[in-house]
Length: 155
Ligand SMILES: NC(=O)c1ccc[n+]([C@@H]2O[C@H](COP(=O)([O-])OP(=O)(O)OC[C@H]3O[C@@H](n4cnc5c(N)ncnc54)[C@H](OP(=O)(O)O)[C@@H]3O)[C@@H](O)[C@H]2O)c1
Image 1 (cartoon, helix red, strand yellow):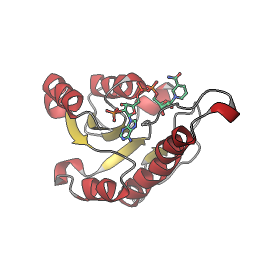
Image 2 (tube, rainbow, N blue to C red):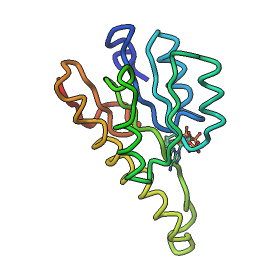
Image 3 (cartoon, protein in one colour):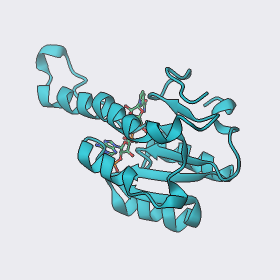
């Protein structure tokens, strides 16, 4: 991860990380927390989110959520407490890799799950977060896990 993604914003900067319960997302959360940022942690496995909150206390706000459930996504962001609602960085990391076999052999449901999670949910979460980010100078939105941002907002 490039340092320019990390060393931005003040100490009170609020970052939202989807898929924070394991892998890249958990590592990204831990990196932001280590730099004094506050992180909204999203994932379906509530016990893991609560473990992160126990570990990092006030620096982490757990939001148990299936990002594929659009209505729940909008409700969750609309219901954030006032002191957690000013999101400046969104890391759209939640996702998975399924159906990696030969195309004729794959289970179509696996591909549908990937499209629902890696593509449609990414757009849903972005749509839910972005309106609050745009007016903020320096607000930053990264679409997916890429070395270079594919889209910037509020700059
Ligand atoms: N590892 C690689 O080599 C690699 C390479 C390229 C791209 N990627 C992408 O990078 C991202 C992270 O990969 P990873 O290796 O760190 O995977 P991982 O350890 O399996 O973590 C995936 C995360 O996404 C969350 N997630 C999945 N579906 C979700 C849903 N419907 N709602 C909410 N959260 C959901 C999981 O949380 P819950 O299960 O708790 O919901 C988990 O925290 C994925 O999008 C993956 O496709 C990974």
